[in-house]
Image (cartoon, rainbow, N blue to C red; front, side, top):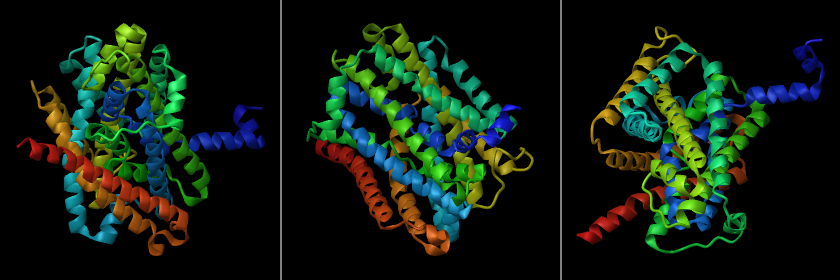
Length: 422
């Protein structure tokens, strides 16, 4: 009797295989959250404040879980992407301006990911003029020559590879008592710089483009409300894995950089600074994790952008379609890749300024996207009997208000400092 014949007769094995087949959108979307920008935020935070700032990952987990579940449920229930639903319910004009802002922000985000590729490979002695074009070419081949199932398996492998940060954390020989204490008994500071750092950690959890990718991935996978429990498990596993990776990144930096008063500005600095304190292996693994996260997000970001823009305006989209079947989708995908690469390859490109402007645009668009989601997920004409219950609404609206407040504060606090300086 073959393995598959046994699987059909064995209920436990059959359910396990079916569950594994359902894995994808939640794990991938959550893992992409640990991109070059996220790794930089976690690294700088832990190097600056040490173990006590680990508590911020608990609210980050709640925020991520709530928003991801709503996304998955909307996609499974309606069979439509978020972009499609926004156009249908709020009109073409609103959709156009939202997506124009998202396009600009996502080009900047993709450039930041390629900066992560360049920085991580530079640690291994590979020039950005080689690593960036080769990575972009590999991304193009993966998307145009593969299909959704192949791409999803590769993306899941990328997600698993991010667990390599466990090695860096263990090599750093952290004080696990202090790690546990940080979650059980948070030590919160009330100075401005600390507040900005906390806002940055929680705020980096959710980006506008992630919501569109998640719902599109649910649709491409063919998930329906009959699969809700398994799809929810996918979301939960993705959120847990994402926050676990963030914990190990912060533990590695707190145990080495913070205790030795090492200041860093980006994730590449963290990888280099780990070497004298945790060894060459920990440093190399940290750099490898940065590379995996960067190439992962450099694939998903332009893919998601091309997908939801084409979806919103009625063009064919999806990596299961050939180039000639979806010319607008692949043209937009290629354009974002090329522009992002060119930005990185320009000598002395203002990457910090690009990153800051990108985050500002994301911050301005996030409230619009979240409010739109909440209004639609509570509309019986859209969701039928699968609208939010009272508990989901309480958590959902609270999360929306908190994230909007965080993004506004992240925009206002730096401007306030600039005003004071003058």
